[in-house]
Amino acid sequence: DMVAALERDVPEYSEYVAEDAQVDFYYGDVTFGDVMAVTDYELNSSFNADSMRTSPVTLVSLSQFNALRALVGEPPLTLAGDEFIVWCDFGEMQDFFNAFLAQSGTLNINGTKMHASGGGIDTLAAETASFAMNTGTLILPDSAMPANKVLGYSNLNVMYNGSRDDVDTLFTESINQAYALDENNRDNPDGWPFTRSMTAVEAYGQAIGLSTVIAYLAIYIGFVLLITCAAILALQQLSEAADNIVRYSLLENIGADQSMINKALFVQIGIYFIFPLALAICHTLVALVVVADVVAVLGHIQIAMPLAMTVALAIVVYGGYFLMTYLASRSMIRPRLRSR
Image 1 (spheres, rainbow, N blue to C red):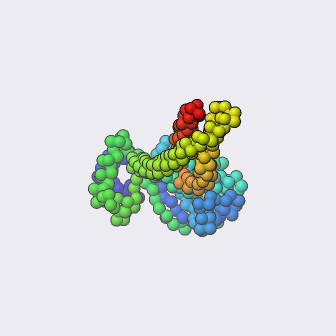
Image 2: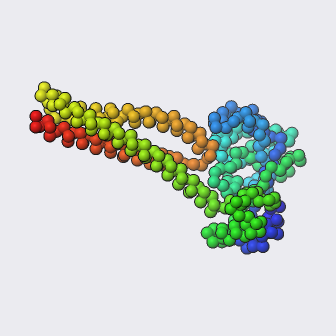
Image 3: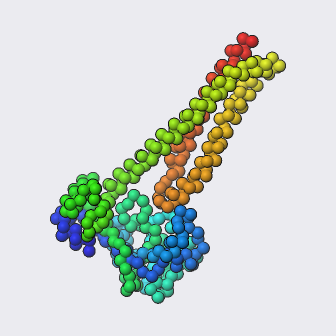
């Protein structure tokens, strides 16, 4: 009982916490291999399917799950004695369990044949975390929980008594003081009642910090390389245009008008700019396959908007260098052609 321990050790606990719900995750005799055996869905390559086959699927009692649902304002669920609910908020694993529900939906749990309820997968977040954490849990009626179950871990979720911005710091400080925690051992306290803690404020802070660092590095490195490549191409083509003034003059002498010369110049510069861009696009498409796998593993990360912004930035910068190179080359050639 984590709440009992916190109320005993933290005098201000009931003052800062309005509601709480503890969820105990147990291990039984059901493994992911049992689920894989009744579905032909192939997991993402980022998962080690062979090692997952022997990994147990966690079990949670319906009463505790309903207490968690009540904590976030969701109505309680009901189950018959031979029914279970699949609980998962992990993106890739949701597809796996959806395939299981569509193709079978039946498992042998503690010697009893049980089937999934008709409500589909429940995607309620199991805890406050930076990423989706629940790769798959079966919600069982309390009476169907196996007698030989083994406790894997427990989560305690709390709702503050007041504004998050006002209470979060006070609550965290009271926890740290009660268990003599600091920044160095915040996630590794010595024993009961918890081994890791995270508040919503901390989760938001971590997410923003991580996104900022990744975005800065990606934009800085990518932008520098993009400008370097475009600048080198621009200088090379400007030098090429200066060296080819005599050749363009010869084209004019044999009857080519200015528009034809401008078109030839545009095509020449365009070819030089397009080939490196085509290679970069091929490399990006291959890399996106890997990125998509990583995003699927992390879950609930939207990359469409950052990807669109990156493409738009690349078009503006690279296209701008191309356009300026063409205009500068054209202006360099025109006066000399007329003077000849």
